[in-house]
Image (cartoon, rainbow, N blue to C red; front, side, top):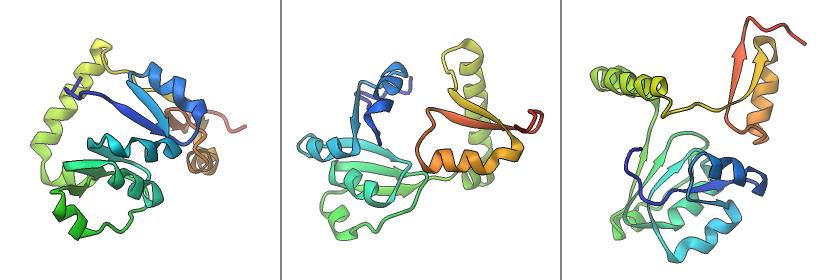
Length: 159
């Protein structure tokens, strides 16, 4: 919807492949497969994992490409290599966006709600848990078991 060309989703396991294809990804590969696409560099990488995966993402970044790190553990990037290929690595966090660009944030929020209301944007909720099971939710995310968001609800009975 935002004008991206080919969308390649990278997953930790092949089991998540069909799920992401169903959400509209053009191609789904595992982190192991990511090493194989280095000959076809990509323009934009959204990295929500970091660490070793972040280095793999940097390895496939095209000249003038951009890596956006928005979650996970950061890795050390070689600034000289970034300079040599005119690549950019930036971080993104919602808190400073909300605090420093409030008008833009509010406009984007209205647009997202409009897309949600029209059905063009559908959040995927994999699991709903009572608030008391927040530790279980964290374990599910850490173990990469969720397909979509995990919602904690204080109104659900503890099991």
